[in-house]
Image (cartoon, rainbow, N blue to C red):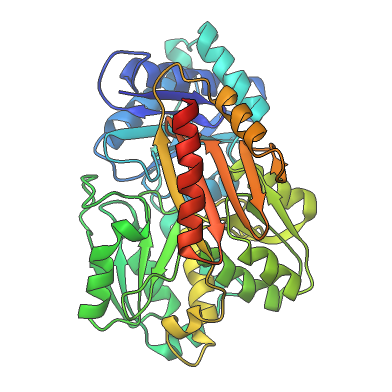
Length: 459
């Protein structure tokens, strides 16, 4: 069992004792703390909520709704939705904040509350710390019976989100429609099953084949859209002779593609390809986190812009994007942020822009992939037991590699000539992530293996 309280929200496994897992008591306490913090900011009392298709989603949602109403807040419930849709709705409804009930790429036993401010963006570190402090002190007061909050359901934001994508100036529906694409989509038993078919139809895709379309939260495979989890999608693309495959995670903020021959386009290159297209139409700066491929920097420089790295985490990417006025940004995990739509990772706008870019290419997706370099990122993780001092481990590794350039802005990033390795603790799981990139797959794996061996030795 696990419970992770952080500045970005609360995440944990369902079942177990309060304080050790995401129990109903923890959900109520944290929702009350966030709602109380929102009320102190005097930006209103309207809150938008939505959830992915997890087994526990309805139960968690009911607890959150009742808690917020008990504080006197008005709740607008989007029901089964996506993270980017809730982000858009917060702004569109002029709400004071939002809560997305999803554990993103985590397995079915996990759930979480992701917290949004009035701009529809993840709350800042300062706001997150204030919420945690309120939860710790039970610093909240519930309303009397005459001042309980209102509750309403609104399912219209699915279409509003799709309409916003179709209207985006860089989404070329006519060009996509002319290609008459056949697409296989793995919606991993969650809300992508509701959103992707109407989106693809609106974009002019001719035929859509859905995999794992029943929204039951019993994910047919590990829900993280990584190559090792997409064998079924790859096989389906080849069997149905489709033009491409699309995979999203349960809350539809991450996106990756499979080529017509079943090979992986590469989640790192989702952002690279979209950025290349956007920069060709709208030159400017780009941002990605420092665990992402160096290919984005090269593409940005080619278009005359400047590339800026950020610490890992959507809120960090967004803050850097705002600081440098970036026209496109995101993360190498398939997260695309298009600021003239909204400042949040959004697989739906990512699909619109990616298909627009592909539609201008004469040949298929496999040929399209050859436009970009074949860098390899080896992605690994080590599970952490309670009580392990990660900072002490990183200090020892930093000392061991003191003759190489080291960046400590977010964990530990070490550069080896043209290669790099990034070590950091996860914000969402009790693990250390170890990412290494090189021109050669074997080299990237060897670098990652060497650092994993170091970590285990120092543990």
